[in-house]
Image (cartoon, rainbow, N blue to C red; front, side, top):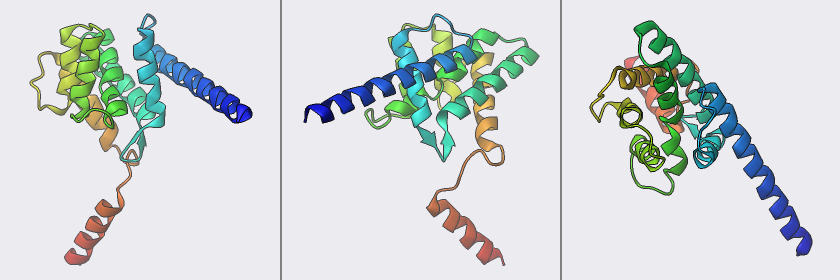
Length: 172
């Protein structure tokens, strides 16, 4: 039993270090060197979550990069756009604990860490059920949509695949 407990403790410690490392990678990608350690650990858990078969960490990096390009082209606040892109889906790591849409959870997390309301709006409004209050909010919506819609980004669920095939059969 002592050996098992030691192995469990060691594994938990390794996973905790990996989560922190992933959070640091994402924070660096967003140009956020002084991110709160608690928020960084939460962000680091994105590596272990997928959405429609797409890695949440890879998706987030893609959205950060797209948001940066769009913000640059549109003359928007690049830092705000990159931070909102980083946090736009962080609520997905808690959807198994909190019964609320992920972007609302993401906004609650941002408020918990006392982040600027403009940033919170850019995070929460990326599905347009909350009114975008700034250009950066629209940028996050666009960057998220581009990342999710590009060919090969997401995989169909079994049910979606069957529906698509049945639709093709009906058309034939």
